[in-house]
Image 1 (cartoon, rainbow, N blue to C red):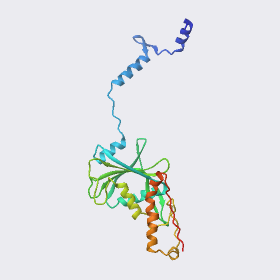
Image 2: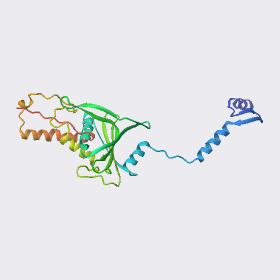
Image 3: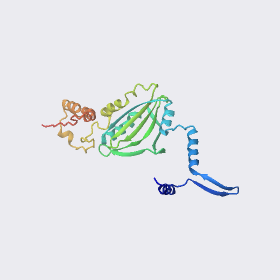
Image 4: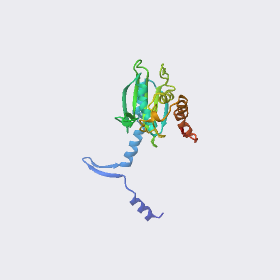
Length: 252
């Protein structure tokens, strides 16, 4: 590089220094030196630990430094019905002490929706949000439930329980809570004695249905085994890539 090129490069490079006039005479300020000094000073400052708002609230409520997490999802209408049944399943022994949703570090109200049931019935469910539950009989028995929706529209339920605490009573075992919830859903949930399609949308029941079909006890038992009970296995079969649909033809 010759002298002219060096001079041209020097002219194109911005000068970080400038001079100001003061009562004490001209003062030269070097902004690069100032920036370097500021960066060096910041490195010497102790770093403040970053706190997660949800974690802080969770550990305080559960009174525990660690939690055990369990989560499961269900597709479409089945997931919405599962969230509806969750409220009924917990109501006898648990109460909600707080519910909220956190978005961009800001606490907001939970998101609710109304879903159709058999006939003209409707039910309101929490679609997205967090609930702090505590036992009515023993307030120290606590857990946290998160209701969410995955990117593909599946409804998800996640629970957090404190590690090192006894999380079991006569009705609930929180080491196996979601399995218990599913079992109770198929035994006592909204699908019982209801008419619905393969996507769990309820169908209007014909008023003459009892007169048209002879509900023999063996037929009812077969339908329950081959249709209702089989539904519990459908999500697992789908994940394994196996056939996960079944139908029954009644003729006579």
